[in-house]
Length: 134
Picture 1 (cartoon, rainbow, N blue to C red):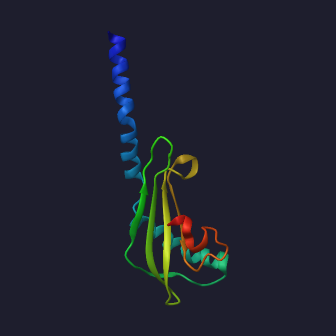
Picture 2: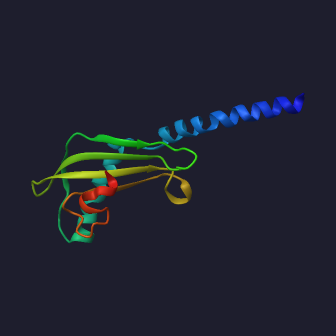
C-alpha cells in the first residue's frame, strides 16, 4: 500500500512538472522590452565592428512580441520573438527583429539575445530580411 502511494504521488508530480518548468522559464526569460536594452547596448559596437559604420539606435518605436515558444518535452529553451521599428542615428527608420532565449547562456544559465536590422545584414546571417528572427 505504501509503495502504491509513493508511485501515485510520483506520477502526480511528473504530470505537473512541465507546467512548473514552463512557469519558471517564463519568469526567467526577459520580456521584449527588457531585451531591447541589450540590443541597444550592442547595436553601435556591432555596427562599428562588422560594418565599419558609426550607426546607433536613436529611438525605439513600439516593441511587440510576435511569438512565444514555451518549453516542452522537445523544446528545452523558451524563445520570444520580438519586433520594433527603430530610428537610427542617420535618421532612417528600420525594422528590428530580435530573439530572446531563456536558459541558453553559459552552461544553461542566463539568457541570450540575437538581433537583426533589415538592410544591415549584408551576409544574411539571419536569412533574407532577417527571416529566421521573425
